[in-house]
Length: 440
Image (cartoon, rainbow, N blue to C red; front, side, top):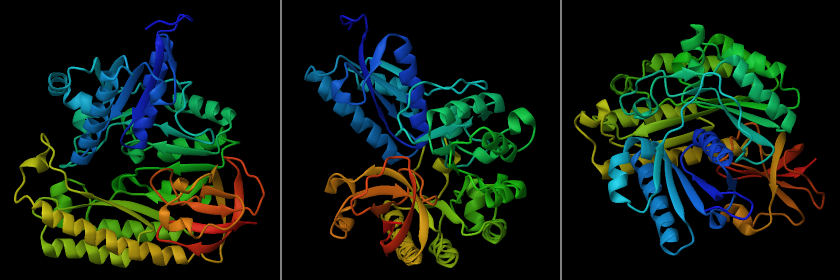
């Protein structure tokens, strides 16, 4: 696949799953570049296509397989010369995939994390924000989760290696730093002997003078310390955005999930966070249809959500994953009941979110500009008819993580903005998950 410039050819990548996979994809592309390939952002321009897969739940596995099949069709048509399958699906089912998909040239599994990892030169995010992975795998052993089996033992990066990457990102000019890992609140337990996220954040802030927002993603409730809560409350650079996957609220289900927590602890933690962090946004996720979940236990979850009124909430239908303890638990919940519970929970959250978002009307908030709206396909269909005349942009408040939360539509009349600008917006309209306002 060599070309006239001595390059082996062009390589492109499709990244599936969560933001952690984006970081892994950057590492994968960096390795191929060092081996003589030229990176292209559009897979249609690639000689070799890589798909970085996810295998966390059944839907993710199906999406990964669909992506592999699409690449195989491109290869059959002569538009691709080589296919590489990477990531969790490849790590978990390498032999089965190799037998099923003969057209795939290579299976390379998951990327490992080095304690003294150096930053890559490849970025697959917009220029104004980045993801920083500080640890790999999970410190916990939840009964439904395959991550520790796929990723191996929990591993934290050293503070020195993280700070080297932050300095590079700061110099590059990013405005938002999203700190990620399966459980960032366990950071440091393995190398420093204690939960060290607050210590790490203080060090990051000291070298991040050009970065406006630092966002914390995926915090297990058990490892959230008072020191961390106070740091979120009083440090201006840290977004007032607390992402705590709770998974359930019933004590019996939490015990079977092996979450090492209970309802009282969760209620006390939420009250503590809301008491100490002014105007905080709490995001969470729940699993519905876990084995043995009764109607009464699901009703308890619904009542809890209705009472707490989370700002952001996602839900998963329980996925029965082989090799996990939950796979063999009984009774398993029928698919139709799981689907009904999922729909009921998300309808409730939609009502809650609509109410909370209306509370922003008339408020003035800071918004990070992501991009200009150039076509109707850039925004949800229900927003199109509400777009004001003039130039409109898509942005996010500190309460909105990239890709997973809502947006703020900014009308500037005819003023031009740039991606990465932090602007002031007065909100005049609210939707279920999005806001619309005018530039101040």
